[in-house]
Image 1: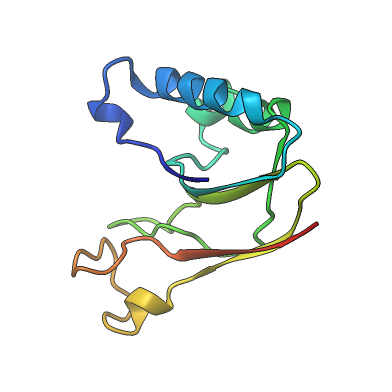
Image 2: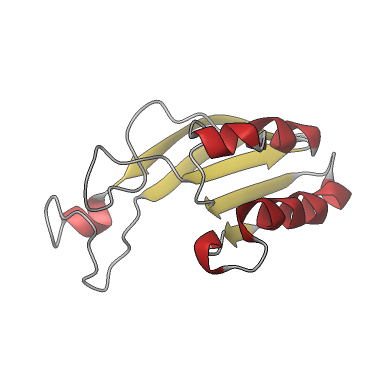
Length: 131
């Protein structure tokens, strides 16, 4: 299942309502083999994300985060960047490891921050998953 969290600043009801919708949509799949991957616009360490218990709520619907050792998935225009792209697995699947790769952008525009040259502005998120 691919997912991209909409820009919650532009969404009626805001961030919390979008997360409630996503967790309600995921609940029927609890216990089934499922891979959820995408731009979730959450890094799970921001105060708002912690207050909404996002990491815990994924566990409650039976999904576990595939661990990524280092790096960031979004560099933005300033700061060190953040991890807002994730892969979760459920059922009999196990997330072994993940990586973020910037090859798609850095090949054409080395080190570009906030790149909008027609290529992704996020790193490619790669996950190794086993059954």
